[in-house]
Length: 385
Image (cartoon, rainbow, N blue to C red; front, top):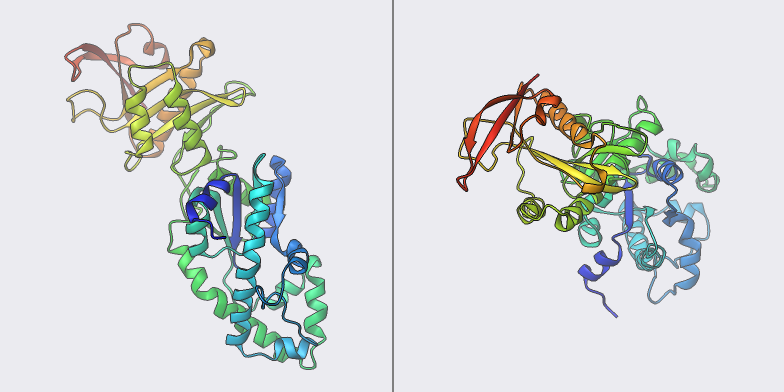
């Protein structure tokens, strides 16, 4: 039976893939991330023997190839060794996908795996993949020094000529990962280069933010560097303001919130902006999250519903659901937008409104009356930083 790619992708929506090069840190990050957020971790290497027992030599020849000793295993040419590794991984992938579909139906799961770029494009979205990278040179010593790799360490040291076996293994891993390493860096996917100056906790925070598990230490672009505003303002323990980033779990939840919010006059327009992601440069939206759900929003835009191209930036779409009003959530949303504007080098923002005496308490001053595209008159306010 052959399943179409879109079906597999749909059934893997709760799976977050952490892949990358050997010694890039994917296992360490996967386990730390799972522990911090209480999410199960599925390590494909730990399931290999189980999958091998369910396989057969006809359908999974690479998984069932036997080697009499380390001399035979490492005595292959680099190309033979590389081809076997790729085929072995591809054969196990069928077992892995079925496991992940089954295990992720009731919630999120983190998969520590060997996912290539072309496979990532087929099985999931960029928002659910993180690549952990290390330049693939001289990897054997570091790999063997890990406590969870002592089996491999003993095996390679059992070769008659250990140095030759090590040389073959290093050359194979380099050949297998060198182009992959460069391609990931040039791709649209999120990646982090292993950096011993960055703690595991800091690395986990960056990956968690990309996945939409938690936002709070600065926006992160595709290569893992910090950019933009802090993105989080706390009112009390269970309220946070998060910047909405494209192709994240939060972006999907935010669209669902907008589509069902009580602000009927503008929700279709805002939903269209989010659905088509009609934001450029520093334009963005923010979500207020309380009691585990989105309860409000605002945006920072170049233009608003006014024929005034000379006026910008606009803090717009300030909205909080009725039952959560009176908690100063609007103030926190506006503060987050202004912090982002300042981080981008701007010195003021504008807010249009029909109300008097509302935005003044947030530091805004009346400028003049303005006429919107519908012909209605509103009051324009400005705040300078």
